Amino acid sequence: LSVGSGRAGSVVTVSPGAGLREFAFDHVFGRDSEQREVYEYCGLGVAVDFVNGTSGAIIVYGQTGSGKTHTMFGPPGAVEGSAEGGLAGRVSSEVIDVVERRRTAGIQVTLDASYVEVFGNEISDLLSDEAVGAHRGANQRMGHRYALNGSLSKPVESTEELNALLQSGNDRKRRACTAMNDRSSRAHAILILRLRQQSHDQEEPVESYLFLADLGGSEKLTKSKANENVRAPGAINVGNEEVARVTWEEYYHGRQRVNETNNINKGLLVLKRCITALRDRKSKTQRVPFADSKLTQLLEPALGGPSRTVVVVCCSEAEEHAEETVQSLRFGEMCRSVEHQAAVTDSSSAVRSVLRQLNTEIAEVEEAIKAKERWETRVTKRQHVVNELNGGTTKLNTEEEMELGGFGAVDFIPDDGTSTRVVVEHEVVGEVLVGAEAERERLEELLDRRRKLLGQQ
Image (cartoon, rainbow, N blue to C red):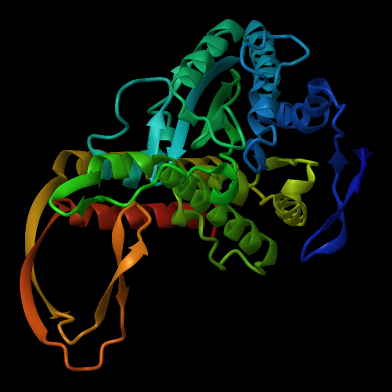
């Protein structure tokens, strides 16, 4: 109904099931707001904290087609420094400018960037055509760690270099046309900047991370029409003539957009659960389900640690999207209620020495796992009781037309108990990772100890 722009602004909505509702935020940007305004309020403070040693994140959230990618990266072909430039380009330019000035002042500074895409439980490196991890299993288990420990990062020396990396990554993104967006992002994209700084009088470098997350848009299949090409596999015969056939290849190809939607929505669901847990938890011992998705595993340092995180919620004012807009505003309202109290960090040389030794041991165990672990084929015999449904439990309707064409729809009637049960034994072949069980158990112990030392649990 109305948008009250500016600091401490609010949005008043009316929608089915929710009625009239007001949502209050730290800042509200109207439809006429410029990219520069969004950066000055949402991006500049995070960039300043980042270059001063505090990790942070800018997360752009909203339904598909609401303008998330435009807000984060600007429109396609946007020129660096133009009025259309997004948050990522503006924040990066500010960071690189500070890096150059500090190098001139004699401070040792290194800036790395990694650009990854999260699709379900897999992570893709948008800056390389090489697979992340030795195999798919390693990707699903350790992909987020490769992204966080710098294994996928590229050094950045100038704004031009970073723009070239971003362009290279954007060319590898998953995109597709849906009924709601001609250039819909079909996965979550995260740009990670890692900054290490050390002056001549410091024993250890100061390291900070900045996550710039362009989340895939939540969507309903009934609106995006991502499922309109899905057809059940099989064939239809009329007499002795085959009149229609859908192959398994066509079936899985048709489901591609549906799988993308499911993966996006699953990551967003876990993100909401994490925000809810952070808002409601009374102590650090209460579990936050970061490990339930790769998206939240990547964002855990920004969401669960001493960091500054900004969430930008993009919404549509169109009446047909009222329900999705209200859901997005509720998420933003929930994020606003999450507060972190920075832990007191012990900077003594003894504590730094313990952490350094622990990190070295963790790296050694991870290398041992990579060297020892292998896939092994295992065969398991299973028994199942199969109902043959031979007791008159089906009825053929020769006059009823089926969905794929032709006549002969089948009705399934409840079993009257006279059908035959047959015990069927079959073998299940699966692949499991073996060879490094002791090392993996040791790694979990070390990671748990490190979290306790840092006060993260």
